[in-house]
Length: 262
Image 1 (cartoon, rainbow, N blue to C red):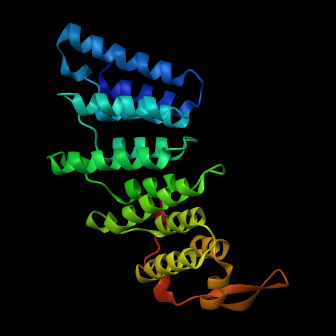
Image 2: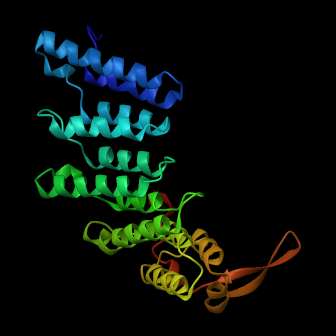
């Protein structure tokens, strides 16, 4: 029998609210965390101290309700805290909060959070080591908004290329990473330079063995000419209907792991 709730019980309550999708979920999660903080202050019992999980639950609610600024405020608090430090999940949650928002500067904001994450890791917070999901989140943030300007598109592409250039210091890219990268190429005007960037990124994807159907579909969307030039197809029949199916070397898809998608 539990005489009084501890951090574990509160974690269950928080997760329930975080998954509820209700409009007032953020207020409820904040209330629960405030209650925990008050109990710890009044009793001196550290069992009530909110953990990184509790604060990340609140950041998740802000992410899902399109409030990236508030998610980042929680991150700021955690970075300054003496009892709880953000981990890879916390930082990546804020990256995704910016990346999935409609803010025009979402790519820059996500990139800035990633840089803070790298700094925290280098300063000794070993739980903040970036991974493929962190970098893929930044690259997804670089996918252009419909009303982007040409300059914004080019700047977002630069951030995406910076991200892929350093990801392997921490974790190998996956097929979701490369699909997002190719999607970012649509930021660029239809020139030979765009074709060159797409070719380079697809070659890198092949080298990593991360070519799956989603990557091929994105390649076809970005540059139909390149797709037709390098991708062979073979006829296949489904329910009596014959279609052309991409036929690629097994080496190109050797490392695709759907279970490790971001």
